[in-house]
Image (tube, rainbow, N blue to C red; front, side, top):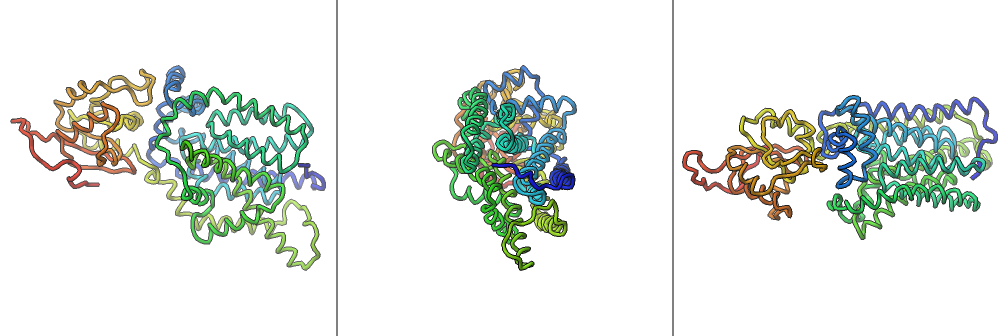
Length: 526
C-alpha cells in the first residue's frame, strides 16, 4: 500500500478533496435534521432516554444486571441529556455520527482513488435509506459506524505513512472506543486483517496492527464477559437464513427494488475490480455480516443494525464502479489506445453529472426517506399510547404492563399515565437498579386489582392473543386476572403495541359474574 501523492497538483487537489468530504457530510447532516422530531419514541429509544436521565451511580448499578453492552453509550447520553432532555436532543448524537461517518466514507474514497470517487461514495452513503433511518434513532449504531470508518481510515494512514507507533495506538484507541459502544464492532478486525493480507504488507505492519488490535480486544474483554451473562436480552433473535442475506443486501442498497437496486448492485460488482479500494471496501462489506450470520447458526446474535458499519463498503464499491464505467466510456469516446487515465482532481462535467444522477436516485427513493421519518415506521409509538390514556383515563383507573418492560413507555411519557395507577409496581427502576422496576408479589397484585373497575393493559398483541402462559409468575397472574375478571372495551394499536381498555365483568351491585365471551372473541377496534 503505497501512497498516491505523486503528481497531485497541489492546492487544487487539496480543494477538491475538501469539497469531496465536506459536501456529503453537509448533505447527511441536513437529511438527519429533516423530520428529526417525528413526535414519538419507540421502545429502545425510550430506554436510552430513561437510562440517560439517571445519575451515574444509578447507571452503573443498572449495567450490572442489564444492557452492559450499551454502557458507554448511556454514559455519553447522560451528558447529552443533562443539557436539555427531549426527543430531538436524544437523536442529535446519531445525526452527528452519521454526518461524521459520511465524511469518513468520502475521505476513504478520495484517499483510495480520487476526489470524485470520494464525493460520489459519500453522497451515496448519505442517501441510503438505512443510513438515514439510524441517523434519526436514539441508539449507538450511527456512532459505531463513524467509529469503524474512522478506524479504517487510520489503518490506511498507519500502513501508508512512515513507521510510527503513535499511529497504531491511535488506530487501536479509536477501535477500542468503538467496540465499547457496541462490542460486535470487533468483527471489523477480520475485515482489516483481510485488507492487510491482500496488500501483502511487511511483517512490521502486521506486528503494529497486532499490538493495536490486541490492545483493543483486551479492553473489550471485561465487557464481553459481563454481556455474556446478560445474553438473555437477545433471546428474541432467531437464526438467520438466506432471507436475511437478501434483506441485508436490499438495506445496504440505495434503492430496495427495481432499476435503482439492480443498477446499484451492478456498480458494486464492477467496483470489485477497483484494486486498492476494493481490497478495503469488499472485506468491510462482506466479512462482518457473514461472520455474525455464521456464528448465529450456533447462538443467534444477528440483527441488521448490529452490522450497520459494514454498509460503508457498498457506496465505496458503487462509486468506484461508476468511476471505472466512466473511465472506459471516456477511452472509447476518444478512441485512444489503452493507457492510464490522467489523475486530475475533477473533470467537472463528469463529476457533476454523477452528482446529478445521485440526486435523481434520491428523488426516486423519496418514499423510503419519507417513510423513515414517520413515527409509524418504528416498531411502536409510545407517545401515541400515552396520548390515548391521557384523553380517556378516568379517576381510579389502573394500568398493567405485560410484560413489565413496557413500563418504559409510561416512564418516557409520564403525563399521559398520571391518571392511571400502576397496580403491579413495587419499586421504581432507578431505585431498584433495574430497567423497568420491581413488581409486587402475585398476591399483592391480586389485592390491588380487586377494587379496580377499569384497567388499561399495555402489551404486544401476541401476549393477549397467545395461548402460551408467561414464564414469570407475576406476569402469568396479571394476564389471568385480566382474562378472568375483565372484558375488553376498546383496543388501540400502534405498531406492535396494543393498548387495551378493560372493564370488570361483575356487576358492581351483586358481584355476580357476567358470562361474556373471552377477550379473544370480542371485536377489536382501532
